[in-house]
Image 1 (cartoon, rainbow, N blue to C red):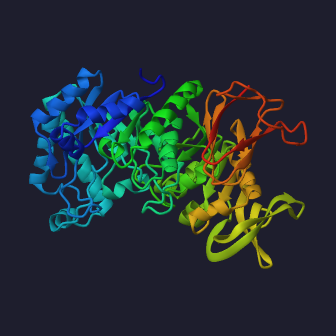
Image 2: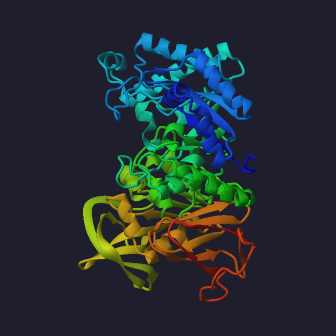
Image 3: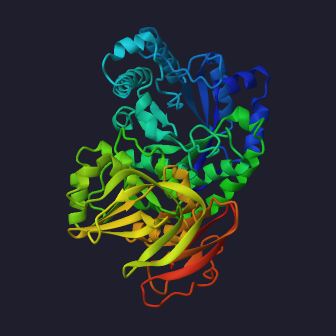
Length: 568
């Protein structure tokens, strides 16, 4: 029996299929997966590196799964043979012979399957002499994005000639801020490919090269859904460099983002070195399938990220781990009363004018210090707030203005370095600051402009240090960023909040210790119901001043756990 709210696929790469065919292990492998997971579909790869399966072998595998009622699609990984496992060598798309080779692989695969997914090695990192000559004076980013758009049209034409009804899927990798540097162009490719797929891998968030935070798996899924609504078919993650807990968190993020299909990569690893992941994933799928059907569509703080943009690399993952529910979009959300802009918004040459328009319409715009640095004097007509080259080493903080001082004072667990931001007294107000030796340094600034407010959020030099902002400071940031939302949380960092449009939400702890979270519902006399138990009693209400339009609840979370809740 399939899951009600999503489907699950297993990816068999060409190397897996070669071994399973050779050793007659396909039946045993399938029985292992189907024992623990309701498998709806498999992706069977025809080509990867030096491995190229014959049509006879591919048809045998396809028929094996079809006989068992499993849907079958094809897959291609566009890599060349490499002697070093981490040396990801792409095709050279400046070489006509290699472009023809790719078209031949696509034609071959399209002759077997009605759907093909391109693994996320469909990029170019080639800097051979031919590529250098072909590039000329263009930047690598401009050269590669133009080249890959051209190649994409070629292979689509090839596939459609062989199989006019084929569904060609491009899968995008998790490193979204760097896509354009290796030729990925979602803004162009949305009009070339039939469908998208999203890599939601985060793996270990500290010791791997990419240092991607857990929330990124949710954020990137929502970003690609906003680019290609209804055609972002699913999320895909793997086992590489994952603890069991990290693997399950990847699964949670993919399902919380309302992926219609979840693909597990890859069969060979999951059936050998990572066997424990399969029964655990099966259990999690079954548990989540009981509840996620009650969730609506994801919503959150509109977060504008233009195509081909970067800056403050992958900062959205860090912000999401603060409990800021983000709703990314490649289109400026001009109708929104609240929006968040990180440094990537600098890609838009009209961004300052758009900010002014949002403020004039009564909106609140939160910008990060990275965007302030990129724009700096361009914002002076709105506010004299300037990024400086000075730094501060801070451990003490103050927040919540009271007359000329602050009402609340906090300390963090360690000293961190933040940039110092200049502002003009009584034109701009500090809502939270770091306190240093006879000085303080803005963490959150507020400036009134027309009918709206501009806020500047200071990002530490090491973005991971944002987790060291004390809970009291984070609460001020959350409350400011959530005024147009139904609720916000009060807690230390590394608590995720996921909102949906039918007054349901999820809170999840990414912390290593037990944590008490206060949920502030922006409504008086609200009730919270835990969907899994259908009970309204969720711990004690926090003691707060009545009549302020908010109802507070205290909820206890153990490490790695979540609660699915509804506002009644």
